[in-house]
Amino acid sequence: HNHRRGPAGFSRTDEAGLEPMANYATDLLPGRPYGAGVYADGHVHVEHWTPTNADLERGTFRSVVVFGNQLRVVNAVPTAASDRHMRQADVIGTTGTTTMKKLRVAVVGAGGTGSHVALALVYLGFTDVLILDDDIVETSNLNRLITATIADIGAPKNLITRRRMREVDARIEVTALPGLRPDGTDRELHDVDLIIGCVDHDGPRDRLNQIAIDTATPYLDIATGIDTSTSPPTIGGRAVLVAPNGPCLHCLRELDPVEVSRWTKDPAQQALDRRHGYGSAGSTPSVVHLNGVTVHAAMAELMAWISGHRPPAQYLDIDLSGFLAATGSSSGTRVAPRAPVPRAVACIACGYRTVEAAG
Image (cartoon, rainbow, N blue to C red):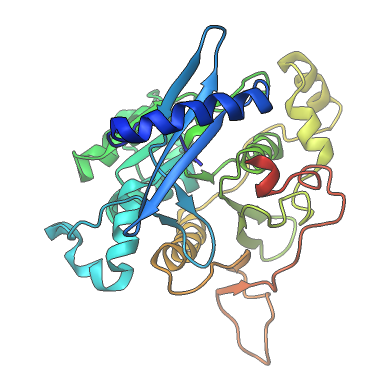
């Protein structure tokens, strides 16, 4: 579904047959692009034509991604594992390793959970990552921001994350971008293969949910929380995979409509809301081990999907308090998948959309 840079085009003989078909198809569907592909020997080549004022603009899909029991880039050329990834090659497999190297991943949020995600991606062998965040490093971040040091206070989180990732592997391509804004179009997220959300507000979370639906792009949403109103505090997190044609965050009742609407208000109105007791007026508790357990549990599901070992969990509960499904006198950290559920009928966000319609 992604149309970026790609391999060389068809031969002149093939082109002669495709151009008339492109004209015919775009005439039947005014204003819409037309794509055609050839699949052989385990690889696919797809080109697309988009109508312009004067002619048809021609381009090539960079990748064609298949969703199912395995997340796979079907036109990726298998490559041998590098020395640095040799000890994980038998776990992830040749197809999984190749897919990781070809997937373009956007990490939205480079804070406590996002920093864990960013380093996990580079250690695993991903090679093309976007980091979206417009926050700066503060002293209070240093208890959990594993990409930062004391010397980074005042520096942009997206830039220090890119620097740290390139320190681990200088070959990785990392693009640092601003975070989501209520008035933004976020077009760069329409051209990726996977979105990983590490945001702490339902406003941007709702935006990512909708982009995933509209572009048929998998979205892995990671969230953590600590409730200090209980004694001892309740500490936990969750990871939700919004897959094409699957239930979205609205279906799963994971979004607060009031919080979503508050995000779209201007800063003065948000400040007024906080003075009247609406929304969070300050920082919330956060600890590095909660972020680490939650993120790496989510990454384990992603690796199971990419390797093809099994389908990923739709919803993971992470409970560090030991309250989740406790049996007898046992206690301790629990990571538990919920039973899968279908998409909600007439969902406000995804009820109108299917992968076929998105095509």
